Amino acid sequence: MTDFNDKNALSERAFLLSVDSGDFDAEASMEELCRLADTAGAQVEATAIQKRPSPEAATFAGRGLLDEIKSFCRDNDIDLIIADGELSPVQVRNIEDITGVRVVDRTTLILDIFAKRARSSEGKLQVELAQLKYSLPRLTGKGTSLSRLGGGIGTRGPGETKLETDRRHIRNRIKNLNAELDKVEKRRQAMHSRRKKNGALSVAIVGYTNAGKSTLMNTLTNAGVLQEDKLFATLDPTARRLTLPDGRQIMLIDTVGLVQRLPHQLVDAFRSTLEEAVWADVILNVCDASDSECVNHINVTMDLLRELDCGAKPIINVLNKCDAVTDGADFDFFENSVKISALTGEGIDNLLEEISGALPKSRRRVKILIPFDKGSLVNLLRENGEVFSEEYTDSGTLMDVSAEISVLGGIKDYII
Image (cartoon, rainbow, N blue to C red; front, side, top):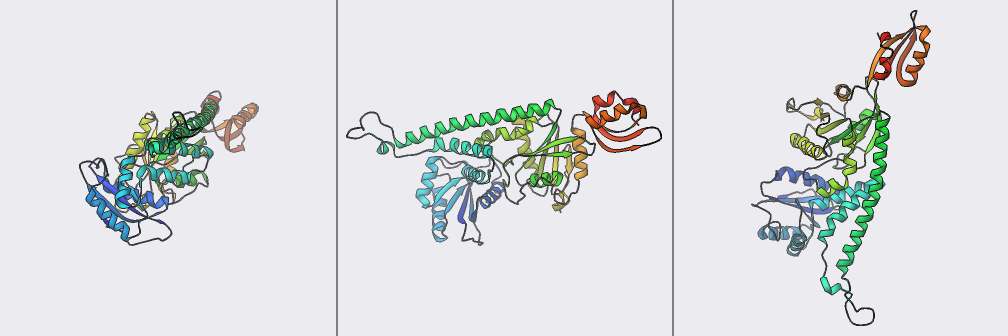
């Protein structure tokens, strides 16, 4: 059991509990849980990892450890126990009965953070849906003691327990939320269809939470997205226009961050947001190169991209925070990777070139000399391309322009 001396009287005092059954890296997961707890506003006072073949069915951890935790919580005014796993209602009740302290699990903690961070109406709907789906099978009540059955007028008949009423209310709310999100999804699909029809190109930023996605977004587009050294600092997707070195304009879209063992309720609820990657022409898989779990984080993202059926799209592994790597780590084994620092700007030019190379070749930047008697072609390029410079020479109008290949094909004889 690890004790932390730094205390914050304004925060909930939390004890973190994990069972190491060998299914995942318990130490790394515990470090992540500490950061999740900090993001949620809890002060981590101590942690404990118990090695077991599997979690105890009734109490998650062994009774002996729980007795020790009970004493520690009593002596240190612990308000909350956070379990690094998904607990059943029985496990929650039993741990609370033994320790006398309120208990939440990893999923509940993440849902709480999402509820705190969601800003857009869609994000709030998605969080509420995830919370309700998670709480529905975990409702517990006092059975028939809360029933409407009894003596007297108006109480005869089958009645309905308070628990059944709660379940019915939650199911109705889930149904309504799904209907509202279906409308949002239809609007999103219509928007994507218009973009594709207009030939708009998009690049989605995905990756592990706190890998620097928002910082990268701000560096590239001055988007003004919240940057904070917290997990899930931003949840709602942000889209901004970006002009590439070859003159093409793209839509750069930031998406929600990921964590290991992301609860499937969140994956389902945020599927419409995550599916920005499905519609994108290129995907940037951003990771924190200074994190010892960098390789694992990239794999977590790749697994989700495959689940969304976009593993075949062009994916660029963006190794961010390279300025913080001090041990000479070599990341050359990553395919299609670019080393950058979104904070300092290092490697950003290389990243932009990689994005340009990965996008469909629908546009081209050229220098073109238009004879004076072909002035209509100058107007064509002004209306259908992006002109970077234009000057009059003895031989005609010299233009530095980016335009669709289909437009340039008809005037290729004038390209220098």
